[in-house]
Image (cartoon, rainbow, N blue to C red; front, side):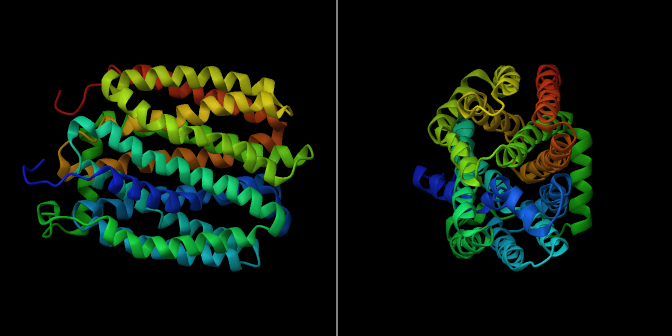
Length: 396
């Protein structure tokens, strides 16, 4: 960190968190309205799972192709370009008259959803390293708020006005954000990339080399991939299950509203990870999440019993992500965006697999099938988190 680096203020961090919320929300509007969207296009539960699955896989591809540019091109410029691309894709989703076009637009939306993963790397270069966990937690609060905004808002709007207005409103929010981001992500000259002579192919090649040299990043990415798969498969299953037993999609949104507690608990838990250490904290939280997943089997059609494990899981999931990022965002600033590329790419590969497999498990065995699938992923997160404590960092 350069001596003349100007650190971000707390209001600036929260403004970036708000921008993150708007951009992140786009991947989650489908959760509460998955059943009416499927009915609108006349496709099965398993087939509608292809929409979020391809969105997540495309995001992983986009992360690999575009996120490394964050170590070479101004993050503010990249963020503005990709947000405009998201705007075009989500407007196309609102207009789509057939399932193929809707799925294609959602896939393109995923390809351009890069901004939320540029922001943490940008923030890591603009905060005191001793406060890194807390700063990442503030930005992650934006992720939580975006998911909350998407699921509650889409559930209410979808129930009373249909699913298309959900995407028109999202397009309007994106238009505003694309104008605001270049101002929010102002960068002083010392932080401009010094790799202007490096070719794009060399930049991608260097990312592959970093994979080999940083096994702890690969492991953290794999853990987060399973963790993200848990999150997506649970909420897609809920979006299918509750309408099947007679509830409206607004109830799915109301149930998702429990994640509002994360706005209060995520920043202090980020401070806790700074004190405990990210690897130990991740294992502790993974065990807590595993216990909560076991309670899903008892929920079934009882919304109050279902809310208890969901409350714990919505708190635990983001902290596992924060811990994963904190294991490598202490590395050399010039490679952090590419390390984030590796991590996020693995996260969304896991999310894509979880989205499809979760809806397929529901199609095959209903709510119980979904619970067993999530339990398998949670066992994987816990075991890998325990193993990760013994994996050395690069250079150790």
